[in-house]
Length: 133
Image (cartoon, rainbow, N blue to C red):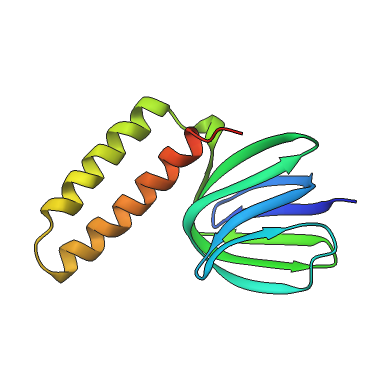
């Protein structure tokens, strides 16, 4: 038995496939989804979604959004998403280093919030591209 997965960003469909297992970051922590999961609607945090198709895992960096599952149909609506295979590892590391420096040097509430979001995005991209299974 499988799940039908669809990941959509505002300007494109990022991913459409069947999957045996999905792990993603919700606002309350990581959740795992298997076939015949109870209906669920949850907010997603910035983080990495892991998808198992047959015995192969694939990572996708998600930039926040919502996930709904019902009747083995999972729809994920995100602000933006990138498959790990589309991310340049060197660029992801450089972006992470820059975001970390900016976060550590942030002054004031607004700058700290903006730097934290940039750091979380860069961290998700780096974790996706470096995912080992």
